[in-house]
Length: 369
Ligand SMILES: [Zn+2]
Image (cartoon, rainbow, N blue to C red):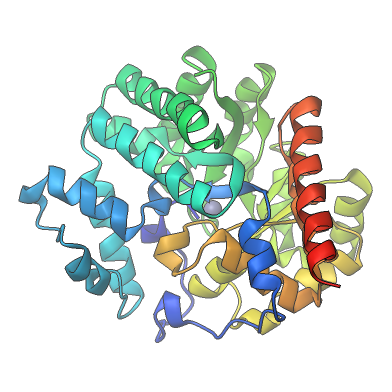
């Protein structure tokens, strides 16, 4: 999800996102394996990745915003009492990103949090429209993310690439602006073109002309679809937007023909279990259809979406999926390899990261008979 403000909620959520459902238990020792496992993340949002630590730094830059900058006070601030409170916190974070230096700081610090989780590569979904519409000049915004990207690669060993997404709720003006930036001002790190925001009342086919223009420049198509709507939205994303991966695709499990199609075409689903519970796309983690997807032969990748906002991180999501699928270390390593294969890295970089994953597994298996 790119903008929780517009998350289509069914009914009134009573549980806070972070405590929405107990995670299936992670098998003994597997958490350590996952923590050190080199990983690629393909579905994670820029502002949605602002951890309390990052918010504290931004809040200190803008004391007039009234967001606590003291880490202890912030920990309380990030304990969501309900979904409305979560939205309030999200918007206050959006409101703290006011100039190009905020953008640079946020981006670099997100990469630092990724490095701590052994993430080596991430395709970060950025919504430039939100920042540009709030008054940050487009050139300065793009320079700030690129500056952070090159510094993160050099200093943290985290390779970042961008997916620019259209915030669906902001309409066709936002689609036009996002397409303009992606096609006429494309920064070096841009690899994909996406679509986020609410699905209900925002038909995917209306964005076809914008995707056509972006894909004509060589960008990959990675829209969100089937998070809160049925499989027909996923079909729309495939036929109208020529999706190469699907963000979430949770409802694909309700359409066997669609699962077969995704498996045959090798179109991966970017699975984000905790997010799906937080936005009430599913009721509990135990009900997540990832098992049905895998059984049908569909490639799945594990992702965190808006991790601090949902009280999770990528390692936790790997543990959850390992629990749901009953995986051992070799199975988890295969999940990590699948994300590398589904990424838009070049062949040589894919091989290098896969070798790192293999080496981690081999070392683990030697230590753990
Ligand atoms: Zn998302």
